[in-house]
Amino acid sequence: MKQASSRVAFTGLLGALALALSFLEGLLPPLPMLPPGAKLGLSNIVAMYAAGSVGLPCALFLAVLKGGFALLGRGLAAGLMSLCGGLISTLAMWLLLCKTKASLMLTGVCGALAHNGAQLLVAWLLTSQAVLFYVPALVVFGVLTGLLTGLVLGLSLPPLQKLARRRGPAPKPRQ
Amino acid sequence: MEKKKLITPWDLLPLLALLLAAAALFFWLNSRPTAVTAVVEREGEALWTQDLASINGPMEKVVDGAGGHQVTVVLTPAGGCISASTCPDQTCVRTGTLTHAGEAALCLPARVSLRLVGPSAGFDAVTY
Image (cartoon, rainbow over all chains, first blue to last red; front, top):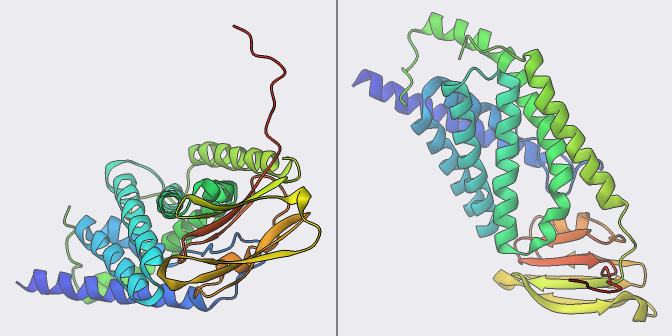
């Protein structure tokens, strides 16, 4: 019982963190070098941590939560893109983290590329083949942001684990 | 996950291959000829196809998109752009002016796209 409530509370905390990071990066002005609509994907750091440390159900719940907020705040197209991108990238990162020996930065890159790929596919279905123009820019940007995601998570993990040891056992991953 | 390495030398190979493929695709797209036709589509259906050579000055058209959004498309002999949109994110407007074949501007909330098409590759003869 205590383990279950601890898991719910921890998932809620991660969800709030993912939404806060997503909101924060929405405040950043668009950089001239980036393709229009491209984002740093800071909330992917939380998704990757959840996929590797807390378990797939929790990580998928975060993707659905983020998609739901995008749907309410930015409309159907943004909601669908966020949901599909989040679910596919979470699955890709979970597979790489839990079923292979892939490094954190490679996992981050694959997660970012899966996110961009799923979003491009949804955009293609909603509009036309015009979206193919964005493929090269999104691949380059996905590699760079994925490396950043893996790096930030790699640097954050030791203090997080130190904190977890001091506070007591973290919820066991459920897969 | 604590046993995961940050990066391994083997990771550099696929990453480098990806970046090279993206760079090749980028240069290929940018080396494409100047656009000759502009196509405005809503939900994949062509609404307006315009031969750019036949335009004398800027030509503006307001397209009714999905969700009640309106998108203003401006075409010139050199290319085109989405100059205004009632969508909340304005990503389509920030795309700027398109001049080369293959370039595109998308307004996802309105499901409207503007893309430029180059001269079609004509065949001198077909043999069997």
